[in-house]
Amino acid sequence: MNGKAGIVHLNITNFAAAVAIAKDTSLSNVPFVVAKADAARATVHAVSMRAWEEGISAGMPLATARRLVRGLITLPPDPRSYDAAHKAMEGVASRYTPVVQNDTGGHLYLDLAGTTALFGPHIDCAIRIRNEIASQTGLEPSVAVASNKLVAKIASRAVRPRGIAYVREGEEASFIAPQDALLLPGIGNVTARIISVAGLREIGELAQLEDNEAIALFGHRGLALRDAARGIDKSKVSAGNLADRTIRRTIDFAEPILDYRAVQAAVTSAMEDLGLELRQAGLGTASVGAAVLYADGVRSENHERTGRLLTLDKDLIGAAMRAFHKAAVRRVRIRGIILTASRLEAPLREPDLFAFEGPTRPERVQSAVDTARLRFGVQAVTLASTLFYA
View 1 (cartoon, rainbow, N blue to C red):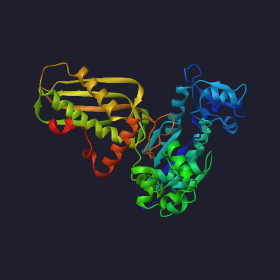
View 2: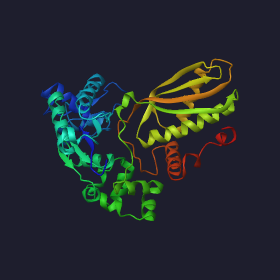
View 3: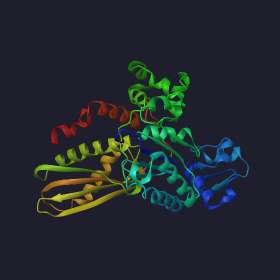
View 4: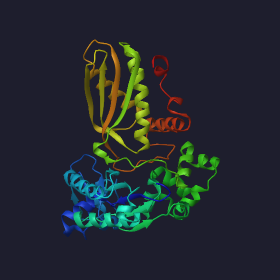
């Protein structure tokens, strides 16, 4: 950021509920939830402020919410309206900077580097963007400006639902230290319980943990949690709409091959790397593609589309191999493969990135593997087949 805080996070609290109110202002003072009421085990997607005040929260079983509030209004999800709102928000922001990361759930990240001469100080520009979004869409986000995405997100959460925060470069630690520890992105129910039992209330208390203390409390993810509490974040703003973004991995063989085991090993290794990037970004994919590049110059591709988000290596590798089999229709040597993950989405609820004990055994194993890869490299932990045939 050339020494100046210029990362902006715009955050619309309870996005789906906010969109519903923007469409029908009569809902602004009544308790309602957004949920698929006809689902077998319906859960609440989003809640209005009045519903939240009655004790209803996102992720709660719909049946429980209805017991809490008699006559609770239940609205179905409205993906078209959500998409329209996101596009309108991005349209406003893109007039001020080309680097706009449009994530799901009412979140925009902007990088305002190099825009001061045109639009003035970054905080003034951010407020102008916020006001234009509110004017055009009826959605009024909280807005924060900081030196990195992590601190900007913490700051925008601290001033929800419609506040403004500016964290000057060099003041990150002093700003986030007194904030509630649960404002740290990536803290789910498991980690929240540990934090509560340990008597840690503020982000600054987490930041002061020694290595051995962090690991003792939170497992190997404890170091990542402690570093996040110190405001450390090197991720960049990725321009584009989340739904339009694609993550790619390219495999180039030293010479054209027909060895299925070598193909499987290469695909496995590539998808392990791709999966790590997905999980670090807190995303899943509903479409995995494989493009087969033949030695004679012909290209054939296909996709494996799923009805759920894939995040674990075993699922990603399986989908990639199925896509490969659908694409590899010729008995000709292969010189390379391009693997893609698209239809990216963030989960309904933010995953507990720092829990050393996930809800399922595969997730616990994946968490441990990711920790090792982040510290020692992607090849530190891999399936044995990749060692013999890659």
